[in-house]
Image (cartoon, rainbow, N blue to C red):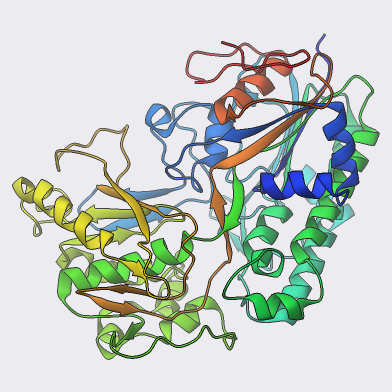
Length: 539
């Protein structure tokens, strides 16, 4: 009989901050666990770093193997349509915890996860994770309602939509980062939610001795996005950080630290403890570039006309403003040009239609995609460019034989985009996904080009020598994702106070599966971490 496993995700916790705050004694419960266990940073894939981080951990393989590129799809049906789902599909491979037979498993509130067959135990999903849509499902069906009746709903999520099958989808409206009072209120809600989550998990632990209890604290993820500028140095927000009167991100991290301490104290003595995150957080270089600057740049390249956030490049660049009060989409929509008023679809119209991407400026260009040479697909991390190929995307567009030449042209266009305040290029590289426009290999992303944004270039205004200035604009979220997470393992065979070299996320998957007594199948592209003092990755 294997020892029970409790695996707790500190979703998107920045490992550098975790390590520093542990060293400074600001996270005392985690500091004690650091001294009792083996720690390593974990590296996830550099592409689709947001959409696929948890998917990589749950399936233990790359998108090229799983044929799943996150929870968004471009529908290759000639209709220029995007689909954003509230969960991963797990079409080819289930989550690792569904693989072993005869193991009792409790799953609580994992990001972008739906119920799957083969799990002997409970699956409680969608109490409150950090995503645009949260799918609420429960097995057994009434257990989630019982837990909510006892512990309450997550205080942050105020929008609930009932699906046709009776399931609930939850969401919340990201507030303006520029309103300190609102940020303080959200901080308090997240601290409360972390306490509720801890109480729910203690209830589950008390029900029986699980072979695996797998859960995540989503509060630290939300806090990382919203409070980065109120915690860490940020050139455009120094004044606001000084006015905040506290480190809101640390406040939430300490609430989670207290929760982890309670869970460990309540666990059986022989429990194997894993604390982890498949991705991290850093100053945000993704949102503005992928959601706003890239779609507007491609629209100007394709049509010769500005639609959003135009400013004459000859004008002086205004100083960064803290005077934004409305929701991000309203602030950006208010910066549309007269041409944009006619060409773009209003986010209000999209919201009334129930489009989950109504807040994303890149989605407002969708009615124009059929007439453009290329367009930016809405996404959360890399810039995703799809060429409009005649006979593939619609009846009109670029001839398939011109695919390579247009890809080369777009590479040069994107390379010319710079931070208007520093002159630094935004893109580090532009990757070509397919060599043949008509290649529909399922191993590949629906994008034809992927733009990797340069880390460290954080800006509110960009310029292009031919297509002009875009911005200044308000920030949506000041914390953005990194590909580096962490893993801390405490239990028999794991050395005390040991720090390993960087491991792969797939290695963490294999380690968790092995710890709960399962065999590691061939599709998992990692190896269980070897146990013992001074342990290293197993070959």
